[in-house]
Structure formats: structure tokens, C-alpha cells
Image 1: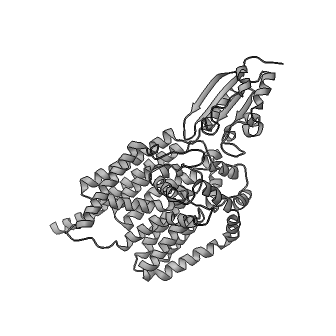
Image 2: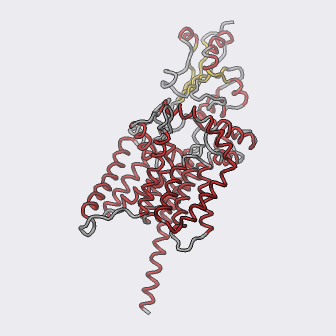
Length: 515
């Protein structure tokens, strides 16, 4: 009787541990979702405005034609954004696929980490991904980066499930094929990690070679219909690579920016503005992260020197090698793709598919310590990243043109002039998508009309509203009357919305109308 009770206890304990583990993963997933859904209320900016032009008030066929002719990325993210934009306001709902994918990446990384290393390592990986400022940013962005990261991570998880079984299951290999296809059709940069995982399988799991080769061939076959479109995109991708080369030429600094920002920072480091590591995650956040990782590294050095039993540690096992290969695959692929003169792929976002493996490796580093040290290190790193995400969402949000549009609408009257200095090429501009039809028709851009609306306003006694998304960075100062006319106007209302790029709106009234 006592033996039977002991046996039942041994069976129930792992089940209970498993439930606690999944409960912790679910909590981290909820935290990730809350951060991303909060950020999803930000105004669309940059490349998201292109996405808006593709999915708003446009048929599916028209959208796909433009993706082939104008874009450099595959169609899955555009197709999903087009579908979700039918649910509600396109400027918000086009982000739904990335919010879902960015949230789903948390449990996917947890399961992948559990398979590749251990439950604690998987749990730590899930926690790091949930609060990473970089992944929070792209968990909001209406482009396909979180989508391809989630599908790539799912492919790694399914690969481990498929290759660890003595009896191969075609259903698992079919699922792997589908996820690889989805990853590649979300973003081409997923190729680097997928290639690394296929090479690992061929070398480390020889018994499954025919299955991995068959599944890879099936993936290639399924992508054949997209080949003509891919070649069209490839033919006009050179301009993009040259622009990136101007901002991020191949060099030590560019590689460092890709690595450091994708791991702990904010994605913006070149072009119209920069958010440094001292901004996000900030000095305190960076200190917490480095301290936690330092504790883990010291522990690793001690283990490497002595081992648990006083002997040196053995070489990494095959699963650790998989993690190492896939962790460096994307950065190495970007470097190789940037060897061509005057071409570069060195943008932090292009390394996103390697981050789940990096997070699992960090989980291994931080959990192979004495328990008090491990808990301390994990809390420090997690807190530093969370602080970075809070700072990012609070102080470095996307330019709040939605807030500016609504504020101006409340004061604008028919006949008033509306003048914007923009940082995005448009149309539509980041402001116009938030304006009502009447105000949108009145909107003028400084790049097209200069400051002439102020001259016209003097003659008709017209109020001029000015909106400048990049105060002090692009325009040099708040947009206002030219020097020769400054005495003819007075600002009666002004407001600034702080963010990654500040937005300033001002209402200028003529002091005296001249007929």
C-alpha cells in the first residue's frame, strides 16, 4: 500500500511541476500581450504608412500587385494585415497579426527552450522575450518581423519534436514544412536560421536525413509559384540595399549596433534620429542587465574551470550547438549579404529570427548557477529589459500624429489653413490618415508650398495651424511664420506630444487682417 502511494506521488509531482511551469509561461504571455496591446495604440509611423496605403480601401489583388512591384518582402504579412484591417480602423487593425505573433513568440520560445535545454531555461527565455524593448517595438510594428520570428521559432520547435522520435511521423514533418514556408513567406531573412537548422539536422541527426531533405524539397516546391514575384522584387531591391549601406555600411560599428540593439535596445539608430542604449533601456536598465549577465558569466567561467566534480566540462552537446548556430545565423547572414560593395542588410530588425535562440542560451547561462544566484541574475536581467520597455512606451513612442490630428480638429474651423512639415514621403502623410475629410482637403505640406500659406493668411485674416513631427531635429525649430511675417501672427494655442520624434501643433492667428 505504501509503495503504491509513493508511486502515485512520484507521478503526480512532475505533473504538478508541469502545470506550475505552464502557469508561469501563461503569466509571461499575458504580460507580453499587455505591453504590446498598449503600444498598439500608437500612431503608425515610417514603413507602417506604406502598409496603410497597401491595405486601406484597396482590393486584395491590387494590394498584391503593389507588393510585387514596390516591396522587397514576401506577401504573407501584407495578406494578413489586409484581412485584419477589414475588422476596424485600418491604422490600428493592420497591426493585429504582429501583436498576435509577438505575443505567441513567448510560449513558442518557452517550449523551444524546454526541448533544447530545460524547463528553467525555457521559462527564462520566455520572460526575456516578453519584456524585450526591441521585441515589444516589433510586436507592434505593422510589418512582418514578429511574424517571421514566431514562425521560425515554431519551425525549430517542430524540428526537435520530429528528430527526437525513434519513429518518424509524417504529420510533424508536414507541420514543419508549413511553418518554414510561412516563415519564408513572411520575411526572406528567416532563411539564415532555417538553413542553419537544416544543416544541423543533416549532421547531428543522420537518421532523419531523408525526412529533412524531403520536407525541404517540399518547401521549395511550394514556393515555386512565388518565384517570378520574388525575381521581380529582387530586380528592384538594389536601391533599398544602397540606402541601407548609406546609413549602415559594413563595419564594426554597424555590426555592434545590430547586435546590441536587437538584444537589449531600441531599433532606431540612424537616419532622422537615434535612440541610444543610454536612452533605452537607459543607464539603470543597462546596469541591471549587465550585472545579471555578469553573474551568469562568472558562474560559467567557474564551471568551465572546475566542473561540478572537479573535472573540466565536456564539449557542448548537439542541442547546444543547434542553439549556437541559430543564434549567430541571422547576424552572420546579414554580414555576408553586406559584402557586396555599396550594399548592406545591417539593420537590427533583420536579426530578429535569431533572438529566440539567443534567449534560450541566456536562459541556460542564468539557470546553471546555485539557486540564489540564478534567481538574482534572472530578476536583474528581466527587470532591466522591462524597464527598457516601459521607457520605450512612455518616452520613445512613435510620433503621436493621431493626438495632434484630434487636437487640431477640435479647434479647426472651415477656411483655416493646415500646414505640415513631414519626415515621411507620403501621401498619405502620418497626419492625414487621422484627419477627417474636410481637414484632409485643407492640409498642405511645406515641401510643396513652403510657407506661402502664411502670406495668404495675412490678406484674408486666416488662421494657420502648423504641425511638425520632428521639432528641432528635421525642421530645426517649431514650424511657424517666416521671419519677415513673424510680427503679423501670434500663437494662441500650442501643444507638444513627446515621443521618439516630438510632435508640435500650434494655432497662429493674424494680428490684423489686410484686405
